[in-house]
Image 1 (cartoon, one colour):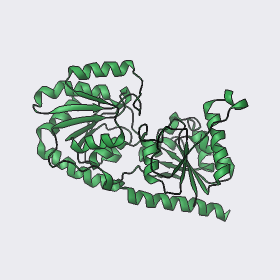
Image 2 (tube, rainbow, N blue to C red):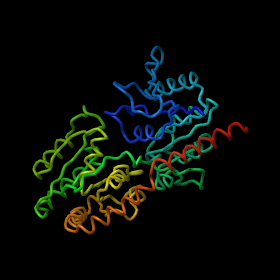
Image 3 (cartoon, rainbow, N blue to C red):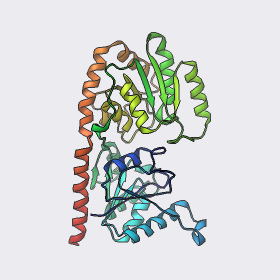
Length: 360
């Protein structure tokens, strides 16, 4: 079976600029899968065979980027003649490519009601008639089907290859970690505020932050980043900036506590899953898909509720038995998202779609 996976236009498929979608695609891709996206520098991620698309110029150069990217994708579809197309996070593009006469999977990682081609119930209803829709959490499924009758929207959660995670040290550091984009939605400033409030009550503990405004080394400076970094320095937090994914996982393996204080409703919450799988105790926001991911393995705290994040931090810092219990439950919860079963589910979904087409 030849599968062609279409990345979002701005998703880098390289180790030094990969976001959650690219990492997931690389993790799940079979060696014969074709992954298409915009041009990268250096070596691509290992999953599948990466093909950089060339957007058309000439009369097309004045068109919107989305249109030019669609045309480039259509060219690759004609060239490779896949049995199945999988489009990540772009409803309008998935709908357009469904006109190629090949089965299309639309895999949603973010709220469809914020996406071009899926904002209105009528658009989402039409999508279900032309593409097969997958989402990474029950929360996203509810968002897709809001104001609609129940429909064929399949939950296919993100996954991790647990066997490849870094080996943790024999004894973990008294370390509290924030790892994520340095933006308000991710609650970076809430983490700084909470640590500043509790650090004097946590002798021997330290805090670090990994992240920048974007998933790349040359991320832009923003007023938010400047403000948060100034506050973090005042609170004694070590700032590490952007780090590659393997470095983030190594930091999680060393940390005792990982905090995921997102303000926006995380559609899934891969950082929380990685932290649990790495053996850290987790504090997470109770919004979006995060409660599904952490189950009963984490402490939940709203980032802007007075004292909530601070109290959760102190509970874990002061109670080693509670940390141990969270770690044990976290390992058990993370096993539900292991790569092997996820690959089997994806394989069956692909085979079913291709088989249904052949019957028509």
